[in-house]
Length: 205
Ligand SMILES: C[S@@+](CC[C@H](N)C(=O)[O-])C[C@H]1O[C@@H](n2cnc3c(N)ncnc32)[C@H](O)[C@@H]1O
Image (cartoon, rainbow, N blue to C red; front, side, top):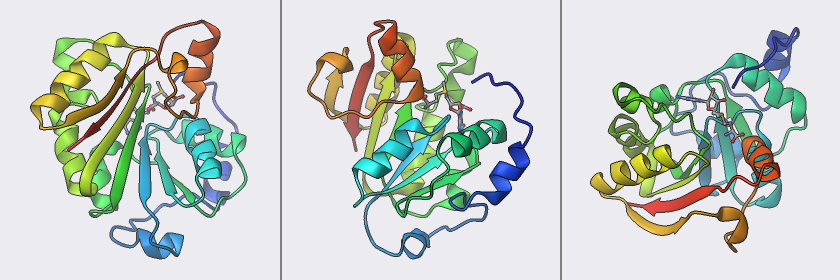
């Protein structure tokens, strides 16, 4: 995600009341003050999806993570209001184990970076490297929901999850034309305007 530099980026991040800086591993129920399910979006970008999911589903707790501080600052600027069931973190998915115990019920991967070259395959958020990490933070049943315009990433993710023991509950090659409940991400809104079809799956293990 390429962005112009945001001048007050550090101020936005340090003043944000729903950004978590420290590890709340095994303490997320205390943070949310309830035992509702916790869903995690990896690579939330400017936060449109996670913020609107939190508004739409008040009985689910949502956490969005994003590795770039500049992008997190944009998300905060766009969505300044604190919601009881939403927290965000400026962390890399590679370090999820430091921040979560077995507390997560669903992981969303929305328009993840495709890393198309073979030598980059391990960096894909659906590579075995990351599936191993997700195993450590899923509560019991693992659920991954993916949306992408990129058919190469979609196909390689299906192979990777399938080899890892995931079963596919739903696979769709044109999400917009389906009746699958959906909340748009920022990228998805742009793709829709250009009539680009979105691939979707829901996989369980
Ligand atoms: C292509 S953008 C999509 C943003 C948003 N999900 C959407 O659909 O509008 C992918 C985002 O994932 C973030 N990202 C990529 N790898 C990540 C990682 N390992 N941990 C956290 N965020 C990551 C990128 O910085 C970028 O903001």
